Length: 570
Image 1: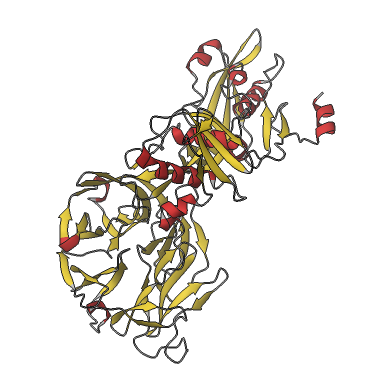
Image 2: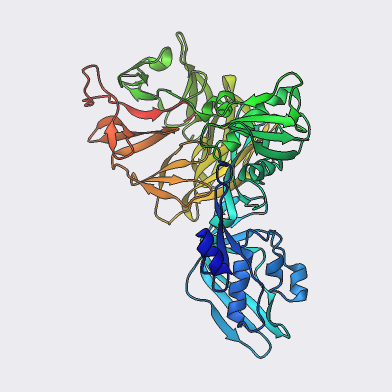
């Protein structure tokens, strides 16, 4: 019957070690429901070997059409079936050598071997992982054949099975001030009875994953989803009740941002309540790009970078020529380094060998003002709320995170995981919630990404996750956010990496002259120096090219060339 079905529908069979049929379920004409591969689980047979039972159990764990894993439980003894919890998390692996089989007088052990590549939490949080997979399955033989009476907790899925069983989704939540959007990258189990948009919105209404739970808000609190349909080239989201009037715009931005990845045809959205228009006199329609209108940093547009040249701060113009900024920052000084630009025309920089951070308005008459003095300060960075961040390194094993507001007013920051290491760099993402740190401890230098949790005047850095591990030799020279999901990392030998919470770091083409980096959306700039000559390089997607021209239109600067590029909030 399976062969006949495949002959008629052109489906494929996925080899899983036992019978398991993958069929194509196409939703023709519906842009929210792409075809997906279904592994149809089959129950065990009494004549199967212990190894084949484990293979069948693994296939049943990957079955999308059996979300409660009822077929998978048939592979277990009655006692173990009562305690096995398939909802306790997922281990994603790459299989290595064939499973080993050890037969004993009372039971048989089948050990699955391979490499762990990722973990998926109960709330869908996906994190890359490592280490060897060496998981035993213990089986006993009864009247109905071999059954499993001990196995690893949760689900064990191969990389291919995980791709088939889970939908990659970017959920968008609100920062605590309702000013911007914060992405939460999760995996959502595919529901074959529902379209992808409904599955995604249902997950959105459940709230953020554990890493963001205390750091963001949702405009959907207090309502539930009835259905998601399509009508007249528009995705219709039907809710149980309305949200507060001041949350309508944030709710619309959350919805547009979350569904944008599934509706890649410019579809708009409509929100209804109980099947009726949201407003009594007209519908609530949401533009496909509402998220960018609500949060300009979602699509920042044409923003020009700043840089140091001729002992002053310059702004790069449209013709790739620059001019000094207004105020004291644009005057020759030569004592300040590591500029950081705010979203509201202010610059912060270090002086006195990295012991002092000062701020100047980028306006006529704007003068430098000392904000903080420490022992050894990291390059400052701004967040979207006009707070200035730096780290005071008391010694090689003691760091103190500093947050400053207007006039240098200091606010407490709790960061226990950073207090006993050397923090070489700290950069806040443009969403104001994600934060990246480069640290040095007993293992070497590494990069982590965490979240900023704001509670009144108190701020804490939590949920730090390793994204660039140490190899014992590498040094981290600089870090820069590409967007709120991806980080660029510059190593000591001018190597360039791209890192995130959900992918292993990947190498990018670099240039031995690069000393610092800054990025904004699709633009990556680097401060470069060779034989005393400085220049700003930009990545063209295929090679590094000089960016800044002098008054003669040349990219060759004899003295005091451009260096230390900086995008706002970069």
